[in-house]
Length: 272
Ligand SMILES: *[C@@H]1O[C@H](CO)[C@@H](O)[C@H](O)[C@H]1NC(C)=O
Ligand SMILES: *[C@@H]1O[C@H](CO)[C@@H](O)[C@H](O)[C@H]1NC(C)=O
Ligand SMILES: *[C@@H]1O[C@H](CO)[C@@H](O)[C@H](O)[C@H]1NC(C)=O
Ligand SMILES: *[C@@H]1O[C@H](CO)[C@@H](O)[C@H](O)[C@H]1NC(C)=O
Image (cartoon, rainbow, N blue to C red; front, top):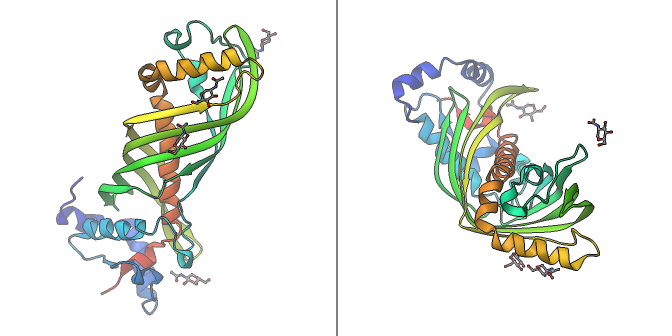
């Protein structure tokens, strides 16, 4: 969203700002540890939004290594402890016939997901709106390589399946458009902007998935699952998109917050 300088003046009366002005004006200008990585922003800058955008871009350049000095961790590999695979409960007859039945014991989780190449993204667009505590980002990952464990308990091919094992997922040309909303919080003597909600749209060119040993001993069923995953790719893609967006949403939300936790607002802005 484009914010005019007139709106920005109004914005500058916001609580956040008051807090910053008080803090910063109250003492001699503190040396910002951020200054060596980017150009700091002036609150009076009519193009404040642009300044914050380029500041964020500069910081994101360090996503591979993190910035230890600011306690910003490396974003790779990226870890997600757990995701609920509602996909298995919602999978339609279109994929597995009527082979998946609902029962009150049905559950499916993926755990300990390790996401590789998560720091290799390209940013197309990024906007920061301090007034609304809103952040918009449009970026793409050339590829993501994910490994983790599944833990399922369901009825499939008319058999109760209780199984755990490794799962591998690859995806290419993943584009992400996300709007994050948050609030500023006080942490000791500092203010942080942190996000708690994300609205995300994800698209990708291709993917492959490998689920090992779902039907422990029965290699015929393992093969049948393999074939299904391969032959029903388009249908699976449609059904799994909400799950993929949830996963990507958690990832992007957590990545941005990990960065912002190291960037107190007092160190982003300079007084003139
Ligand atoms: C779960 O299913 C079993 C058997 O089908 C039934 O006895 C039990 O009451 C159900 N539990 C719940 C919470 O629905
Ligand atoms: C907050 O306090 C810590 C020490 O307690 C200090 O290192 C830090 O620079 C302070 N931050 C601000 C913005 O004054
Ligand atoms: C993902 O890509 C890697 C590297 O190209 C490859 O070794 C692996 O087998 C692929 N995994 C899947 C599930 O396609
Ligand atoms: C399933 O496919 C993978 C490769 O995608 C292969 O390594 C595995 O052996 C296959 N399993 C069976 C039972 O065919």
